[in-house]
Amino acid sequence: MMPFLHRLFGATIVLPALIAVGLLAVDSCSESASGKFPLADVATALVGVFEQGPIAQVDPFDAAAVSMLRVALCCAASSLIGLALGCLLGFVRPLGLLLSPSVDFVRGLPITFLLVPLIWVVGITKSPIPWVLSCVPCSLIVLVCVYDRTRLISSDRSATARSFFGGRGIDMLRHFYFQELKTGFAVGLRLATPYAVIVIGVLEYVGAGSAEPGFGTMVQMLSERGGQEPATIAAVIWYGFFGLFLLLVIEAAEGALLRWQGN
Amino acid sequence: MSIESDGYLIEVDRVCWPDATNGVGPVKAEIRPGEIIGVMGPSGTGKSTLLKAIAGWGSELSGTALTRILNGGQTLDRKEICILPQHSAELIFPWYKVRRNLKIASKVGERFANIGSVEIIAEQLGLSEDLLVKFPNQLSGGQQRRLALGMVLLRRPKIALLDEPFTGLDPDLRIRVWDLMHSILKGGGGAPPMAVILVSHSVEDVAVLCDRVFVLENHDLQSSFSAELVREAMLSPVLPSDLFFGRQHQPEVREWSSEIRGAIGRASAGA
Image (cartoon, rainbow over all chains, first blue to last red; front, side, top):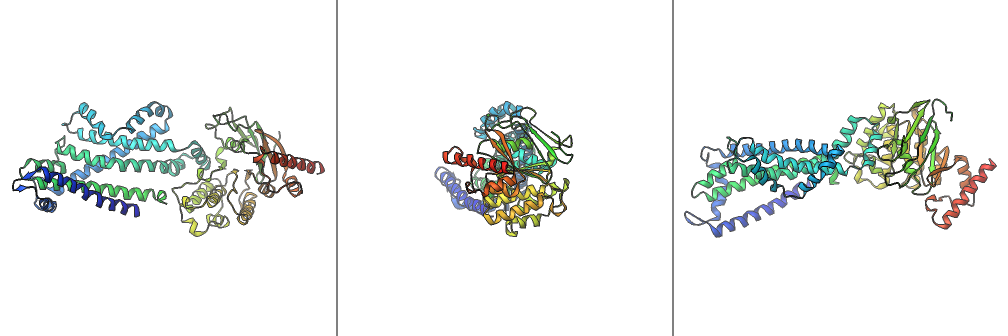
């Protein structure tokens, strides 16, 4: 519970600070229709976004639900793909030897760096493209974390466990490998979640692919209207909070899964 | 070499680690259910390597046709062998609480005809109720050692390979654990007796528990003694009871070591 509260406390300090810096920046360089850009308008808009009803036929609640569902699906798909590939690389030695230089290269990159070549290759407008753009880098994050974890399993430890279980594969899988890999998987999922939140929000904003409008689509519609800067900023802040909430849920799940590490 | 049908004939070829360190063998020995064989020798002479070779760590060690363990002419299944490594953490599952670790061992052991009780073993090993609900990383080194030992005892293999199982135990507890091991390994509670190969630096452990003692030196089994001879040797005024073979490189310890072998040899001739 304490790490969770610690993170929440950190978020309550960092997020308002970031928002304040952003608003000050906007305040200093923008002007609304009524003259100077007022901070109070953004605060009012934070409540008003969900009270004013559909924005250009997009309901804010529905849009938020669509976006979070996309993020959750992206995280789930990436987790499975990353876990499977990480295990493959970690346990099939020739494959690991062949591909470990590539994994080491990917580990050193900011993962958003991959977006540029991906967009070059697959474009951005067709329907499955947002899934490719969000899932491929997220899968790579999980893959790297799982693969790293497999490399931390010493041969002494696995040989001892094999001897203990009398070579019974199902027990080795359940009580040893699954538990060992859980750590890498949980870390990978936690790292991939903020990335998925950002990429899906941005892809919705630029109108990539899907017909179903998400929260990013709504932000884009707001930004195209004149005099809606406070509402636009408020919507972005709300999206950040949704992402943070999802991350906190995943962190809480990670804490519950890996309770033994907190001791 | 002939051996009765209920005994095990262990043959280990020359093996070493891939970096060519701590090689050992060839070794040929027989052991019977309920028998405890002690293995002593200086550090780095290959005692742990020998245990790992017997446990069947073929892919980790270098060597050809590493180990054969025959039981009445038939090769013994590897699932009947379990090793307690020198570092307890290699055996313990840190993600499970202490009780769950012991229960898993008991469950695995049941498949191999175990009848041990988690609670009884835990109590005799000094793992109280408040320790059973903790995670292993909340235990001290000695408590982890006892947990690992309890796991092997509950796992109940036909051959248990114990690498310095009493490290970190205080004297009182050590005596309790000796009693427990003696009763379990010899077939207490109706369980089938286990054959044990015990690596230890402590002459007391070996003298109290073992039926026979092998001295491993220069990566080979140099000599084998009955435990009675070791016990006699321990009583000799020439010997410090806590003689440490592992420090033979020091001249005075080398002298002690020479004296203990001389004393054991004299006792042997006398017997």
